[in-house]
Each structure stands twice: as structure tokens, then as C-alpha cells.
Length: 346
Ligand code: MRU
Image 1 (spheres, rainbow, N blue to C red):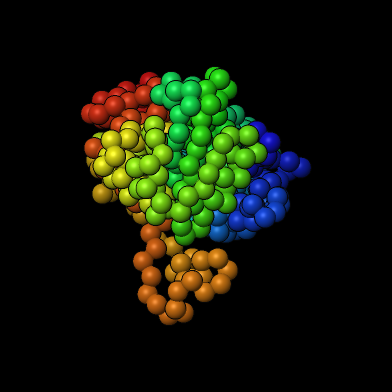
Image 2: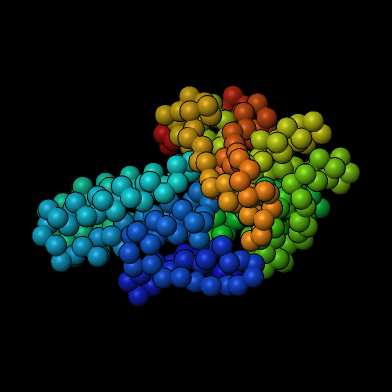
């Protein structure tokens, strides 16, 4: 992968600023929890696994800033950092999964010297980062089997290297197929309102030499009808135990179109995206974002100034529209619950 979404360097977290792509390749440095939390809220880093990793490193940032405090105050400051990072974005469960792991590391190391706790937290964040790299490759390997040489796929939003440590989930499937010698062509939904598809997926796939075409979201139906599409592949922000999938707004519509055209609809996501505490997608908290994203879409007015706006960042695709869920453990098909449960318990 030519670019890095996030990395730890010189005692700070470096993020590729995804709000500036594809115009500029700019990295920003984070040494304060509040600044990092605002960066997550502002989508400088985005995509479920990448949000979790950024937050894990954010806990290290918070711990290092408090390292000279008395032990009790130090632990309180780390817990405050975890609480602040948990308030950034509600839908991607990977955020809470990563923060829970950091909380456990803090608990397991309580009573040790502050510096030792900082080291343990950094080690945990590095471990999550490395695991994510491997998991994405495993997802890719399992998913690549579903693609043939010459496959044409539609994807929505960005579930690529930019949304993970690197490589990606949905796009990881494309990369793995390509590495296995299969040629794959991707139609990337532009993904209104914030254009993760046209700004990020198209950019990322071009960097990797994958054949990509950007389409307006509302062109997906005609592409499914006319362009011999083999499948749709998307990522996920949270998957309930019945297999309902929360992902970027517009995913549900694409799944309905895929069903209508008899095209398989695949979801690629790590096991950390499963939320077995939720019976169905109806319980998934959906982030509502600022009206300005729609009223001022491209940096200029795209709707009347004061018009009311409905701007959920995600939707839920019911499990009966999902042909398969691909994770690092394999490929699940309906009924999803037994396989998802086995994956979590493995
Ligand atoms: O609002 P975003 O850009 O964070 O939304 C991202 C998505 O919906 C992705 O498809 C999802 O997080 C999967 S990333 C591997």
C-alpha cells in the first residue's frame, strides 16, 4: 500500500487527513486527546477499523500527557481520555471494542509506574494495529474466492486501506483477487454527502492500479442493469447478531437494487464489527450529522440556506438482502447467527 492511514511516530499519532484527499496528501500530528477526538468527529480519520485504531492510540496520547500526575490522577485522566474518545462517533462498534481493550490494559497494569502503563498501552495499540493488517489480508483471501477473473463489482463509501490500518475489508477482497491473478474492475459509488467513494475509494484504487470508474450514487441501478456486474461488496460499521448491517448511508438502497437485479451483495468486515449484544439492526445507534454537509456539500451552497435537512450518516441493510458476510474467519451465509456466534467464540 503506497500510503499510510495512521502511524505512531515521535511519541505522537500521525493521521493522513482524509478530508483533504484527493486534492492534497497531508499528514497531521496529534498529541492532545481533545484535538484527536475532534479529528475523528471531523472525519480526518474515518472507517470503522481505522477509527478504533486511532482511538486506541488516542488513549496512549492521553496517558502520555498525564504521565507526571500522581497515580490516581493519572488513571483518572486515562479514563477521561477513553470516555471522550467514546463520545466521538456512535455507530462503528470497532471504536468501543478498541477502547474496551485499552481499558482492560489499564486495569491489568494499575499499580505499576505511570511510564510502564504508558508502555503497556502503546504496546496494546501497536498490537491492534498489526492484528488489523493481518485480519484485512485474511478477509481478502476469503473474499477473493467469490470473485472470478474479469469480475466487475460495485462498492459504496470507502472500505479500503484508508478505512483500516491498511489494505481494507471490501477493497481488501479486490486487492486479494488482483494479487491472485484475477482482473477486477470496480464501480465506485461517489457516496454523497461526503464523497468517500469518489474522493477516497477512487483515489486509493488508482494508487493500486485497479481499474475504477466513479458513478453517481443514483447511477447504480443503471450500472447493475447494463454493465454485467458480478457482485456488490461493501464494508460495515456494525453488524447485529441476526446479520443486519449498518454501513454508510446509501448501502441499503444499493442492496435493494442488487436484489432486484439478481446480483449478490457481500459485506466484508472483521469480527470486531460484530455486535452480538444487539438482536437486530433496529438497535444500532445511527449517527446524525450536521445539516451543513448537505446544504453546503461541495464548499458552496447546494441547498437553500435554512432548508431543514435529514442527514443520517449510516443506514441498516436487513440481513435478508445480504448474500454473505466475509470476515477473517471465513464466509457466513444465512441464517447468520450461528456462524457469527461461532466466530466470536472462536
Ligand atoms: O463515515 P465514515 O466514512 O466513517 O463511514 C465509513 C463506512 O461506512 C465504511 O464503509 C465502514 O466503516 C467500513 S470501513 C472498512
